[in-house]
Length: 428
Image (cartoon, rainbow, N blue to C red):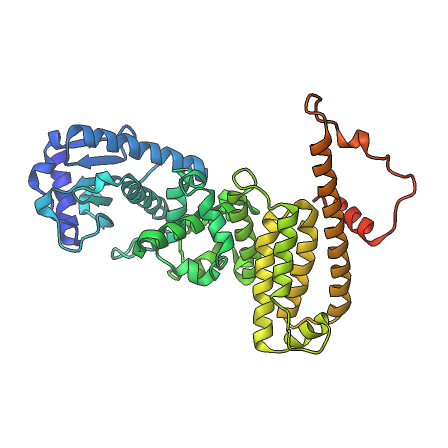
């Protein structure tokens, strides 16, 4: 009976366009069933099948825990280690498909070409895609073998999450995303199919997907909304529309999604894995962005020249680029400069959006604060250098609070003091 059901499965699979399966794979000695009973592995050696069955069950448990899903399953997953003589030309090394096997019911098949087991990440990605497919089909109408695949970004994100994406990619990848062109446009990203990418491009897409998932899972509803989107009864075939079925507010406000996404990338890159930029470097980077908007040929003062620049399409583009650069800097800027960087970013973002009222006064005030802050930062640095050079090496480090003069009972009201008070109030 079991052999007859398996024969029906593979006969239906061949009709659906799967690879040809050698008849000997149906023999009991050539198949292994996992502990969860959801996975049946065909072909290969006994050791290969056992290791694959154990890893598949581990991925299943990890996915259930990550998305907060139950342990029940409906459709079995067949993993086939295809013999060398059964490989089709141009067939992917990992090929996932769904088919109905009449009396045997619906099945999900993962075909692994010879040598695929050597690429563990590729095989695990195929198994995770099959698991997400099984979960997403539980409520969908499956008519005429027509169904909607799970979102590509979610497949890539879960593959990274179950392999600890913050360690697999490393801080350097996420830091590179911050220093690059920023996050891609939301609609373009959602429509991108990671399975069609190769090499470095695929790695970047996977890192972006993992950060994207982290941003959504940390928002209102968290992982529950991710699972809700995966298990929609009637998901849209358009990836953008499907995203809007669960997160309509974020689809209508892509700038907010971009900020959440960028913050998620920044958290993966810092603070534990990437040091903050020092105060002098923060000042230098901020100055460089401001100088990039200078108009040397203009006879107007700097803020007036910037105001005229913002009236042109090229100028608005330059202000938009400057705001983007400051957004990246803001994630890593020294705490002393972080609030000031944000003030400049908001000003430049307003200029890019044609909101120019009051710019000159705001810019001049920010410049006064920047120069005063630079001066105070230099004084602090000089004092710490002097103290480090003159402090006795045999004595323990003295708490600066004990050697600095006590705070006056009358609060200072100069510009730099007001600025530092505002920084303290914001919690920077």
